[in-house]
Structure formats: C-alpha cells, structure tokens
Length: 109
Length: 281
Image 1 (cartoon, rainbow over the protein chains, first blue to last red):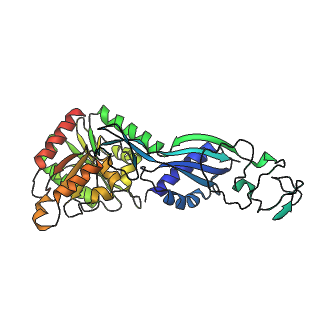
Image 2: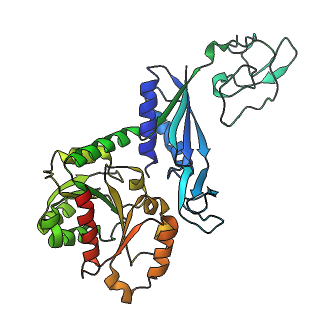
Image 3: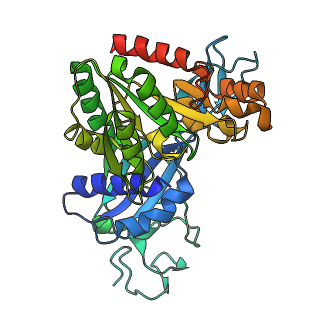
C-alpha cells in the first residue's frame, strides 16, 4: 500500500507551507486514474498527521473523473478504470483527466 | 459567551435575538454553516451538522481560518529527484530501465541471463530492490555484473532518492546499461518515477492471462512487456493470445517480447532492443 507514503508527502508539504500555524483543513485532488485510493488515504491521514501542525485537520478529497481522448477518432471517453474502449472500438486513449494527485488548498488558523 | 455566534450561552441549545433556536456542539470551525460571506468552496464536503437554518445574526469571524491555495503535486519531490537522475544518466549516455513484476515472474533470472549473454557488449550494472536480503545482488555479481542492493524494509517500491543513493555506490561507465530491478509488486512502483528511460514489466505464463486487466496501472506505465517462461507453455493452461489481447487493451503501444530466460527463446530480440535503446541514450 503506497497510500501511507503519499499521505506522508502531503503532511510534509502542508507542514512546511503552514509556517507553524495550525492547519484546520486540507483539500486533496485525486484523479480516478491516479492509482491512489481515497479510502486508504483517509485511513492513513489522522495517524500520519499526529504530532504535526496538521493534527486534527479535516481532510477533504475531490475526485476528478477519468477522461480519455480516442487517438483514432478524437472522441472523449469516460474512464472508470485505467483503460477503456471508444464507441469506434479504439482502445488507444490519451488521458486528458484523471491522473491528478495534488494538494489544492489548506485552511490555517 | 459563544465566540462564534456571539450569543450569551455556550450550552448545546440556545435562543437568539431573532427568535431562532438551535442546538449545536459549538465546534464551529469543524462544520460549514451556510454563511452569506464568500467561502472559496468549489468542492463538496460532508456537512455533518443537523440544524438547517440561515443565520441572520452577526458572526464573529475571528475564528474563521485563512484558506491558502497550494496546487502542489503530492509526488513533486520524487518527480524532481527522478528528473535529476534522468539528467545524470543522460550526461553519461547510460540507458536506465526499471524492471517491475509480481514476485516470481523471473526478473532476476532474466537479468542473469542477459548479463551472461550480452553483459560484455552492453556494459550492464544492476540496482536490486528487495524488502530484505542481498540474495539477488549476489546472484547478479555471480553472473558477472556490478550490483548494488537496496533493501526497502517495509517499503513496497524503490523511489528516486534510493536510486540516487545507489549511484554513489556504483561505477556508471559512459554508454553502459543500468538495469534497476524494482521490488516485486505490480501496484506501487507504477507511481514512482526513478529517472528511467522506460519501465519494463515482466510477466510469466505461470500467472493468469488477466494480469494486465488486474494491474492496469503497471501495464499502462510500462512501455515494454516481457512475457517470460514460454518454455513452460506445454505444461500450463495459459492462452498467450488472450493475454496479449488483454495487454493491448490496457496499453496498445507496448513493445512485447516473448522469452524463456532459462532456455533462451526470444532473447535475441530482447538483446536487439536493448542495443538500440542504448545507442539512443
């Protein structure tokens, strides 16, 4: 499970950015195609935040949908998994959305 | 006094001057009221309060926090280190490949055989990633190549910092080939760029044909697929065409080699590809 490592990176970045102020809320953006499970991130967050300025902060996760553009016909295809099939039967899809793994914002006291 | 709404009582239930009565636990910073001032809320978050009403009384907003936009990539540190590794390797014209697979697909055997057959020509050195033991690095050295073992302990993947650390312990001659054997795991290593030119996923015919569909992130992230142990095909139920169709569905651009690292089938093509890639590094 790599989510703990991911959460530790989040805590590290937020702890630096908050400059000693207490962090109340962290907003993460996780794409549906990012190979990171929001539930696992939630599971680790409180534990990883302990003893840091992020302790007690609320975690909000915004999930970005997966969308691919078909390289054969140019149509956009919604992707629920990291692969899919276009209406034209094409499977060569360029991902245009869904790989995000970002800290969007934080709220500090 | 309640510091958030300014009313006189801090108990759970209280009445305001405008007549509204509500009960809440006074953890104001912890739930979003429907205030009329401009929150920057362009996301949805769970509202867990149970008093749906519009406040019209003045709030004291001293306790409202400051929202700071960050827009930072979570894996930025690894990505930055990976780019540094990539630059370091490019300056030496070293071809670096990141080999990934589930445990037991035959990565180490493929490396040993590649070193014995083509090590002199390609100038191969190896970084071995395993949770424990130096057994694999010992096998690589016995095959005749320089090897550095990284033990990740409980870690389930190599990252760019570990590889940068291994550079210091390796001699990386100009125009050589660095093969990085990642921890046997088809999930986590997909996310961590090491600075390699390409990921090579090794699968074997003793695994299921549906591996590409079960672990699509890794098959998508790997430019090359090596299907190993094809010498065992007469003895196992494995439909090569179905496996390849699954792999194509996940990654139509993947270069595929079908090999037996023990008997030698298909290895000439694999060595040919390594030769081409090294010339371009």
